[in-house]
Length: 115
Image (cartoon, rainbow, N blue to C red; front, side, top):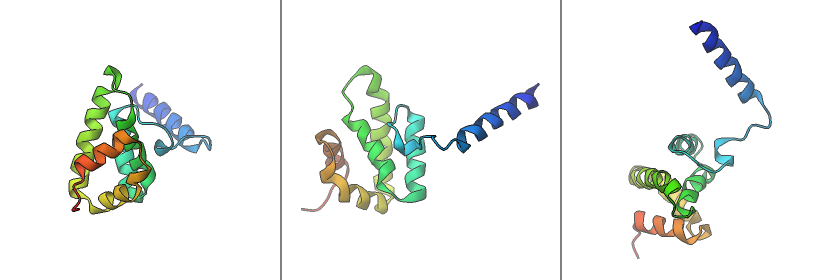
């Protein structure tokens, strides 16, 4: 029974991955901490701004109870990763002025640049 269940899960996953209409993690808003993890993986694999932009979008969500945990996780992971990865700092600073005020403020508070 366990093996059959696993095979069904794998078949469902294969069908999802083969679906040409499947949305990539960076093509949809982050809604859970797991989404943030996937976005970080996508950035570290590609080095592109798109997944980071989705992470920064979290800071632009309204201040509501539903968003508290997601914002806290995003803030922690962003702060931790900019301390460790210069490429991330470069990508974020390159696009900083395109950001709405809330995420721009987080960038400015997190990445200290010399005047």
